Length: 434
Ligand code: PLP
Image (cartoon, rainbow, N blue to C red; front, side):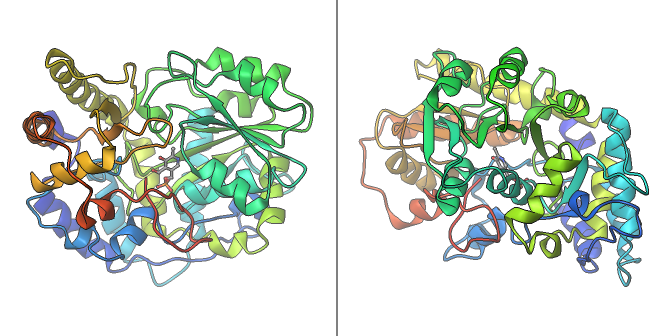
């Protein structure tokens, strides 16, 4: 049995199992009081997810022919782990009730893994469970920035930071990445004397590159009092570096967000966490007064998240599959003389297509391969998600073929797969992307 099969399910059996389980998927308000936790630890953000909204628009991915290889949205082709699917199936039948205790158990599991103090009858905890990490990321950003509290962030990086700044009318201070594509923490510190927040994506999206933890520790030590460091660890499980969650446990001015959408393959199921000191989590409610009612995570997703956390070998197995497929593809591209951004420790990478990225994506769509988008700071680079070995073989042959073709103007179909704006939260309406 291949590793890819062991750590996931075949597409057909996955669909069959999930079809049965998702019928009963339901959302519920979190029972903060009953769990002895504060409302802050139970806040939530996001109901309509990015890919869901994207798929609902025009010729979304749902309408995409089944023979198209989709390596555009940094999703995990393996889907949820078998242990997560079993948990969904077992939990779905309880779906007639709210069952807040299932989320509580998921949070407890997370606390135990990371050595975080649990909530008690009188004190709030350090973990908020949400439908995905995009919602709590917005809350983390929005509760710390505003007209007199700027946002400092990297460029290119994940657009959710600057978009939240626009919503909050917070001045934006983009800072170039270093020559090794890390966040330039010294330049970030120098960017403004008193920002509301520094946003660090680690590994960075779209480059996949790491910012050394020592740099984040340095920023925390040297930043002005009153500002927070937000570390987005959506892709961190794919890397070999240490997480920043221990800095939360040490009561630093830091908020870490994590998702079950990526290594755990649960993008459509929606689960994510914000990890921070209770007072920082409590602030989320002031940013978005309706935050709590948006918190609803279904019991099936909470149970799947818990099962994934408890699945001992899952991360190492999937990290290796991803690293092997990424390395093989990057070696192939380099051997053929193409220019890549080196150092990705994520499930995606960037490659220079020597023409506007959208035009190249259009050519790739003609070859039935949907790749990711470009960033204004690197307009000739496209981001490509690491898929299965078969998917990467299809990518490689289509890539070589398309690089031999002359540039053509982007067509409508490709632009539908490469939306340029990122609007990740249900707090907004519009086209979105991962
Ligand atoms: N952070 C980063 C860097 C992302 O790329 C994404 C989605 O692709 C998210 C956060 C939000 O993902 P989700 O809401 O599915 O957890």
